[in-house]
Image (tube, rainbow, N blue to C red; front, side, top):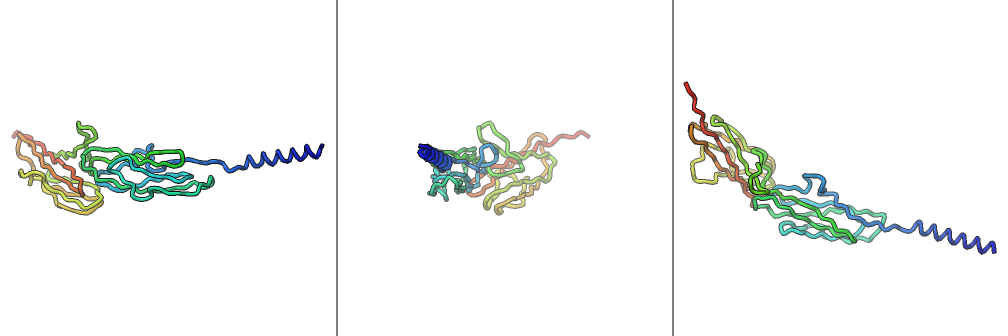
Amino acid sequence: MKKVYLLCAIAAALFLFASCHKDPENHTLFIVYPNPSQPFEGCLYADEELDSIVFETFDSYNAFSMAEWISVTAGESYDVDYDYRNLYAFTTLVSFKPNTTGKNRRGTVRIDSYDYSSAAVFLQLGYMDIHHPMPIQTAVADSVSFDLYVNFQATEDSLCFNVSRPWTLSYTENADQTWAVFDKTQGTAGNNKITLTLAPNTDTENGRTAVLALKCGEVTNLINIRQEAAIETTE
């Protein structure tokens, strides 16, 4: 009888050992980039057309664009053999249509893996990366204007911007705006600085505005050069 009890105890111990060492079921889906807690991740300018999504999962996945202006261009899906010891890191490439609306827009790419679903959120701004003059929020939601205010005696200023492709700069109206002359009318992608040569304003009643169009691919932003009226001086 003691042998029977001993055999039963050994069998129970082996069962408990096997239960404790059974492969665990690990399933997760975590988006590393763009991280919604980081304000500038997933944010791109109107002329920018490429970005990516980085995420981790133990399982196969599928990626779907939830916005007409976003496309998944590489890494749309991937099949893996599940292994609780292998946490995979994937990168999915996404492309964007240029934002010609003049307004900010938000869109998502959905990632499905196992029983989980997460969304990568992208914010495409309605303007290019123009940092002089800085963008100013307008009364219209999600839209900005670019206004460079200059003194009536000013003779020089500049425009500074960073774009993703070749660009052109031109006047937008037929009226005489030659009091504001720029030294370049076209250029290449990257950081650019345009020197403006200004004629002093001698009109004591009226300020004046020159409207320039910065065009990069399909995106155009207007830049207003606003010069104040002259101040009358007394002898």
